[in-house]
Image (cartoon, rainbow, N blue to C red; front, side):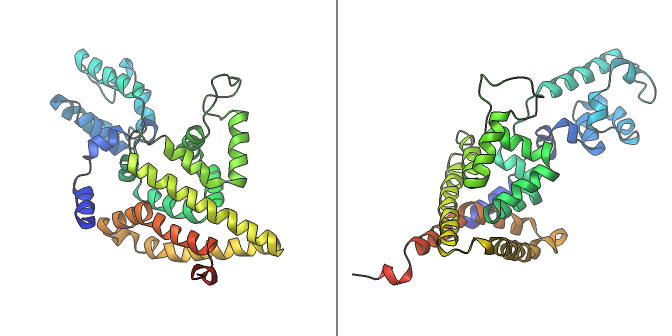
Length: 289
């Protein structure tokens, strides 16, 4: 059954045009714009080469006007053609992009696998990395979803910038219970991915137990000074294990990548449950009468 499900997911992915429509317009490349123009209608084939030759990306496309389309280098003399292109562009701008898990996986296959592995092993360092190097595309949607703004929040901050209450909630959870941020994020997927979101929430709860037990054990034994060393050792262990995927990534079959993603989603919670049992019930107490 696992093989059947994996093969079905590999061969039932959306077409490139359907995936493109779920991608933010600001991240469209020149090839994406050409594909969009090509799918507008049959008569747009005469214009797609101009868009490709001029390297019109998503940001340039969103700034086009009727005067731009009628002038060189586009030189679209037919007014109805210009009107249709601008109307479709206007619809594209107003479309609220909301990616589900599988659409995100199809668009960002490598990032999906990276987030699944790194958030499980090093949640605080991973969130810090997203804040520093992937702020707009990943961190902002994450904090707005996991720590939503209250209706009576002040509006003196920029539109995309989280409010102070959001930052306070996020930082509190970041330092104390980082896996609960993942639970809050997955909770918003319940209506779309009921079972997958349930697995993520249950896994986050188990990881929270391990995280609390780890720091409590260090505190009880007076070994908090060894925490930086332990973090570095764990980080190097994760990097070594993931290098098995990173180094041969260009040659890695899609089937193996999808298999690893499904293992991280659906099998890892059971492995974590075993670790929780071993942590809470040591071997010398499990066999007592």
